[in-house]
Length: 186
Image: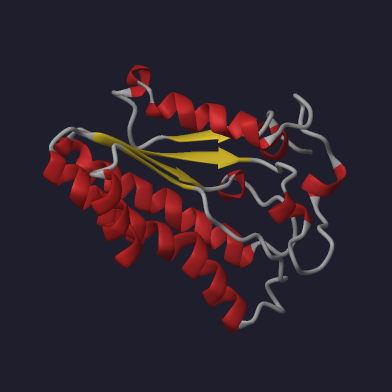
């Protein structure tokens, strides 16, 4: 991948990779098109897998270890809104891939973890195409209140620090308690 090679050439081998790109468009299961499915899977799963492959090669060659954090979604823990079949599948793929990558890269002192954000109000989420969200996430607030992208960044930052050197193959939900709410709904 040309972009990764340019990064390595310009800056040297990275020590950390955070995969945070993604799209959040909604199409209900009975309406989702193959084109939309492929677009979401390509951006949310295939792209990060290729980034990990390319940049972890450089990390291994440098021999200094490293950190990889894949930003997935708490929708892998429980359905949140209607229209997430492709999105949840792509993020579920990221969580499964993170576990495998953590296993394969552990001997190189590279940790791989996932952060599972909840319904963070970002331009991408609020401008997602598709029907208006419906489901429990639309009608209920998280127990700890609304949170911001900086709250997700704090978890990513922690996983990049020496304090997290023995944390790998983990998924950390940063969702203000929303996943607890969904799992325990009546």
